[in-house]
Length: 116
Length: 110
Image 1 (cartoon, each protein chain N blue to C red):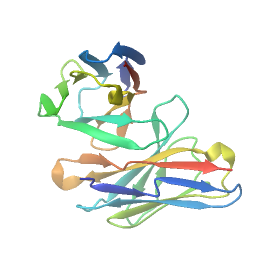
Image 2: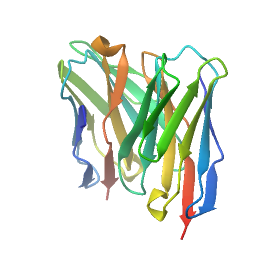
Image 3: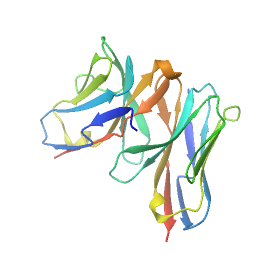
């Protein structure tokens, strides 16, 4: 079964609103989680690294104020898309690293965001 | 910098045929490699996970191999079915984040 749960799997929101996506590690504690975005006909690209108890590390070109990441516990990281714009419509996926299983990274199933 | 390449980008085969999808990576220092399936408008489904110490994993009609030294992995699908039509992604883990290939769009012809 899934060891990383991502919610919601699909969400539609209005332009200008904010939407939150949750990523939970179910069977292990994850001090580090990762957020990716998939652009049309492109691969999944890393957006940011979420670190428990500290600030996230963003990849070049990713707006920190646009994509807020919070990693408040060892099993939960959240991605909040603020002031959503239709251009933010995309597939977002998270992953979590299990240090106790050889640094295996488990992926969530992903979330489809549509901004209308 | 690690790069992951999947060839071919798209593939169409008649139902019932066996097929092989390829994934190559430039840095052999990986922790593991995963194969995923993505259906249009759906999420990712993990198919097989191969740890760096392993050479292959099997699940039903799927078999994935890993050759770290040559930077290659293959996903073998036996007796293909129309329901296998999807995009298949491979991702390598460096112990930090995972790096994905662009995927192979597979279409099984009935």
